[in-house]
Amino acid sequence: MDGESRALYGCLLQDVVSEARGQRGLLGILLIASFARGDALPGSDLDLRLYFAPGHTRRFAAEMREGILIERGSADVESARAKLATNPMEVYAYLDGCILYDPEGVIVQLVSEARALFAAYRTPEKERSESAYWLVQDYETFSERDKCGSYAHP
Image (cartoon, rainbow, N blue to C red):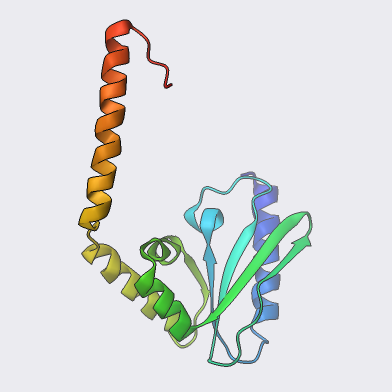
């Protein structure tokens, strides 16, 4: 991404964070997805999660600013913690995320919990068996095609 695009995104993030900080009950803001991972392209959207005290959450919001889509999801901390505990893929938002605002350390705590869950995660036996079945099927398919000199997937 060129310097001009970076500057635009930086200004947009500053504006959004500044506006959000004025919301009652706000505890923190986490930048997630491609921009947080560092693999955003020009035109990529900005994905934010806003964390609120119980009873202060907001609806999902999406808007265009300067031709950039900005999406804001929100949750209270306990709902976010419950989602983290029940959805293994949820850890990646925290592992890849970039904390933009966290005066009370609630997002730091969620990131710590995500790291612990990630370190302890083991793929359930049923999923391992199902994956093994499909891997063996693909291996056998590709092995047969190798013998014929064809590498195209069916």
